Image 1 (cartoon, rainbow, N blue to C red):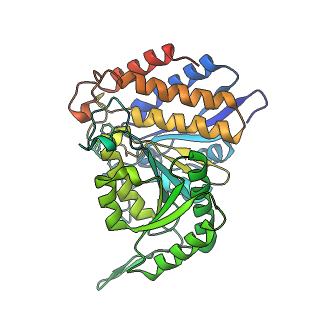
Image 2: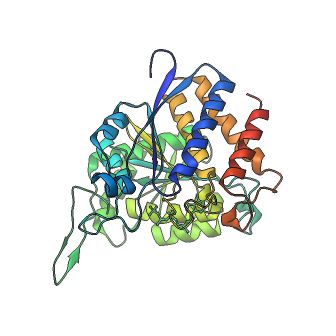
Length: 363
Ligand code: ATP
């Protein structure tokens, strides 16, 4: 952090709906900083993504990478366009490069519906669910150091877990469950009944659990866990899972909150963090003003909270709560119904409502 309580933020609008949701979120963050006082932002805009690759031949320029490395936090909207690909057919995904380069091993995916949004699950006990899926984010089936192979006869992919990374990841989860102060429980979501690699994962999980006496450890197979997320989600507190499983389960979590436009996330490492909504660039609705920006705003609130803890800034923590409250208040009377839920509230309407309630929130 700069000496004058200014957080340097690398800002990646990216592709598709990214542009539409980035600038208004930046303005909300400036608003909340001005309301709370005591800190400010130094915004550093970074060009990267699929459109950038199409025009300049590089998806994540070195300069953007350096800016990200030097920043206090990274706020990223969405990257990738289905029709823009590397010569080998892979989609352009600089957000994955950032995860690998910056060692962002913990993908934090809260599942906590906004109270005024129409509930998806019928059981009233599911209406105030509040749990976190931790998606391991640098190894598993996405591990860049374990490429697969493909020839005429067969295709292989590699699933990689390293002891070092598992230990850091599980410690992160047990600490988080302790800090949340809820059920104080971490569930390993794996497939150790079929794959020995998950046996290795689970052994390390229970080894690390011994260091956190105030937090319970348990486990669940991934297929059964998908059912738990629908049938009795109130039993979940913190759940940690492999990269690919986490990719899938966090979309299920987003759906249970009302859609991808409501699901924030953070990719956190020892020294850096990227805050980014769970959704992609949504090219099917880009440019139409239909994107729900709530996930982006809530990701920005997660960034404020993380900055507050990391830099011991009470003001940033207060700003995080104020922004969350502004979102809750904007939806509270159930009149604001986003397009993805069949309503008519597009991007501008949601921003206007949150801005309005932010002006009225006590800080
Ligand atoms: P990625 O693989 O890059 O995460 P994806 O293939 O999962 O992307 P998205 O771009 O997230 O795809 O879009 C999936 C669907 O969700 C699309 O129909 C899109 O319009 C919708 N969607 C995504 N984000 C939003 C949003 N913020 N508001 C409304 N709808 C959204």
